[in-house]
Structure formats: C-alpha cells, structure tokens
Length: 257
Image (cartoon, rainbow, N blue to C red; front, side):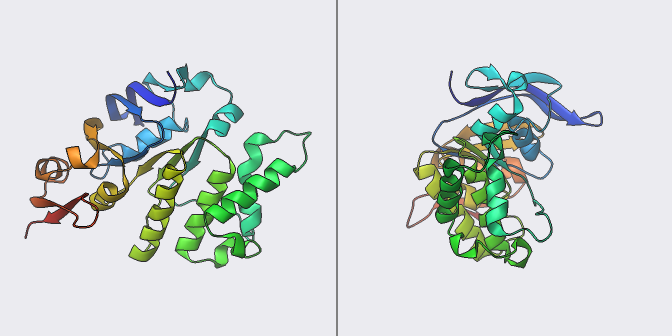
C-alpha cells in the first residue's frame, strides 16, 4: 500500500504516555491538518511520522514498509519536515539555507549539480523568496523566514511534506500567506500534513482533518463532515456555533459568549 500511515502507535516521553494505540492513514495528494487541544499528541504524531521519535509499540509505514527499516537518506528523499521554530545558523544567506535541502540527494563524492540548482531555484520561486537570495535569514521578517524554511523543505523534492505549526508566532497576514502557499503545494500534487492550533484555519484550508484528544483520534474526514459544535465542545470544552463560510462553504466556528 502506497503512502504514509500509522498502525497502533504507542509513544511518550520519560515514562509519560502521549499516544495510545493510535492508527491513521494519510490520504495521498491531500492537505491533512491535525487539530486538538494543547498536549493532546499532535506534534508527537508528526514527529513519529517523520521518524524523529521511535514508538514504544506499533509502526509507521511508508509505502507499506516500516519506517525504522528504511535508510535515513531514503526517508529524507520521500518525507520532508518543517519543525516548530527552526533556528538558522548565524549569518547564513537565504540561498545557502534553501540549498541545504539538497543534502539527501548528495553524497560525499558528489558536487553541486544542475539538478540541485534547478531544485533550489524552483523552490525559491514557488515560495516567492528568489529576490531574497542574498539576504541573511536573520534579517528577514517572520513571514519571510517561514517561506524560506518551506523553500528548504521543498528543495528536498519529497512527495510528502510535514509541517509542525507553520503559522506559530506569525501575525494574521503572514499566517494567511503561509497557508495559501501550503494550499498551492497541495494543488500541485504534494501530500501535506500540518499541525495547526486554529480550527477555523484548519477548516478553511484542509481537505482532510484529523481531530485528536488525549493521545487518541476522535474523528477524521473532510472539514464539512466533521467540524461541528459537538466536536468543538469535545475537543476544547467550548460552546460554539458552526456556520458555513459565505464564500467557501467551509465550517466557521463562532465561540459562544
């Protein structure tokens, strides 16, 4: 079976259980957004899908193969990850940082190739950071930096892209900018999994939602099928009305007073 899926995952930190017998399949070519309250296991699940964590039990399968048995560079050619709040080396330029996304495609004996140059140029064009190529990353605004990090992930040319809270610390304009970019990447055929805190942003941009609570999946499916007042109450303990967006039809959560 192709694609990425988790089977009966159990995981935690320092003896504290976080995920409990969790299974989920990530649909190919879709933008899947994981939502849920703080500390419910969203980022832990994403880190397991990226093989940054090893489960206590269960497995993550990539194209039917246990992720733990696949060589690291092969995983990096198939799954890209943008972690929370990444930190760039001091003084690095945009083009140099994006170029680091080509590491999985290089060996000790290989030099910078035409394919590397093409991939970096295409990634910078897709994220609209080509004009910033010679700027230092630490000089950029939050939205610009986030686009640069996404460009680095795109330069890996992976069919699957994992994004852990890509809008954290951004103002609403830059949040919209980043999510529009992620939506375009999905439209181009990539499989994307993102963790978001804002359920309205998730409902607006996701084609598939995974709702989590207490280390388990509560429900999953298309936003219009799963986002309702009952789900909001179950996840966040919030009384709310859910109405359709007048322009897109996506669910919009209106908290009660």
